[in-house]
Image 1 (cartoon, rainbow, N blue to C red):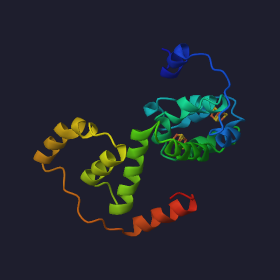
Image 2: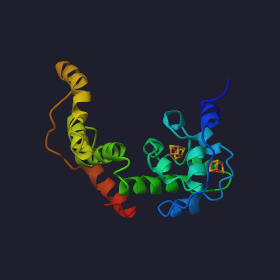
Image 3: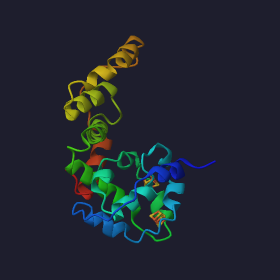
Image 4: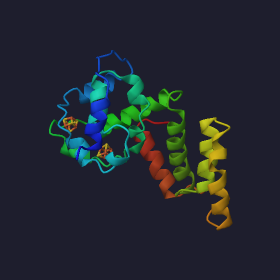
Length: 191
Ligand code: SF4
Ligand code: SF4
């Protein structure tokens, strides 16, 4: 039975190499990719990605900025480093994925919802030390700047409230996890 990746490739348009200034740094990191697919086969999250890691590196090398930065794959990467450890070309794949994530934030007008959710999730953990659902979703709605978005979540939120599964956000308590995340952000040069 053909894999989902093979099926996608059958319908994929032929690629032309485009010049993308934004992707240049990442392209240098993955220029040696020989499309062996080891990264995809090793990635624990590939099943949830709209582009597999191998496909993503292909598109980066072809300068397909729109498609790369709009991909949800960047936000499905859990930075586990498996692909980096197993790539036969020793390419810095996890760092390349992180660099793409930063680019997606810089081009947030194209990827606003995904970037907004990712940023809200990280900020939530920084503030509370764990996911605080109501605070997370409030941050997400504000960051997405889409007034219709909360409507899609009203019914499940009411059901969860009825079952006592949702709690109003309390005061943020920045414990040791907050300090740890600040240190990582500083090290990565992130705001
Ligand atoms: S494992 Fe390395 S060489 Fe193979 S497809 Fe992935 S990035 Fe390319
Ligand atoms: S670092 Fe990201 S892309 Fe690489 S294997 Fe882990 S989840 Fe997949």
